[in-house]
Image 1 (spheres, rainbow, N blue to C red):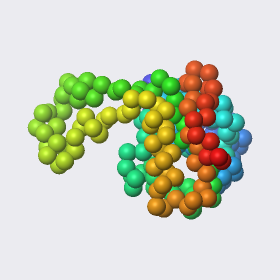
Image 2 (image 1 turned 180 degrees about the vertical axis):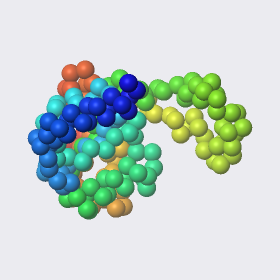
Image 3 (image 1 turned 135 degrees about the vertical axis):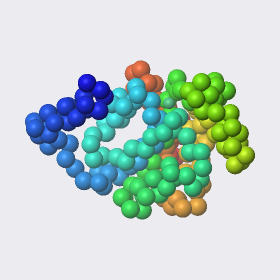
Amino acid sequence: MNRLEKIMKVNEEFINNEEYISYQTDKYPDKKMVIFTCMDTRLTQLLPKAMGIRNGDAKIIKNAGALITHPFGSVMRSIVVAIFELGAEEVFVVGHHGCGMSNINTNGVIEKMKESGIKQEVLDTVRFTGIDLNHWLHGFDRVETSVAESVEMIRNHPLIPKNIIVHGLVMNPETGQIDVLIDGNK
Ligand SMILES: [Zn+2]
């Protein structure tokens, strides 16, 4: 069985056993909060558990490194929609130790692109459109700095109301322990 076939088999059992019933909720976050975090696989179930988040409690936005790369990119749009359309009042930026986006080897990634058949001309074309691939792929050097920058970006964003509370947290991806870097209540 390939991955899709395996998923479809699990899905059929899930539906037949009515396992979805315990997850039923609506689209509004019960705890009126947004969590913005990293796509790291270790956090998939650990982070909600370690923060006491159940299905329906929070809007969870993820990307590589929990980085806001553009003030009007998809992360900020998601946060804006969560606030104005879905009733969120509080944002938790959750970075983590040992993140794959810290000190990412951007030249190594570009080499792998070439090895997988992406031609130099294509990379040159991307460069000509004004995109510096190394800069685009770059993550961060220190998680504390990147979380603080994300918090500042959200707090100072022209479309985020001043009464929205924004926190900056760092999680241990092994134990789930949270260090509060920025307490938005203070
Ligand atoms: Zn990460």
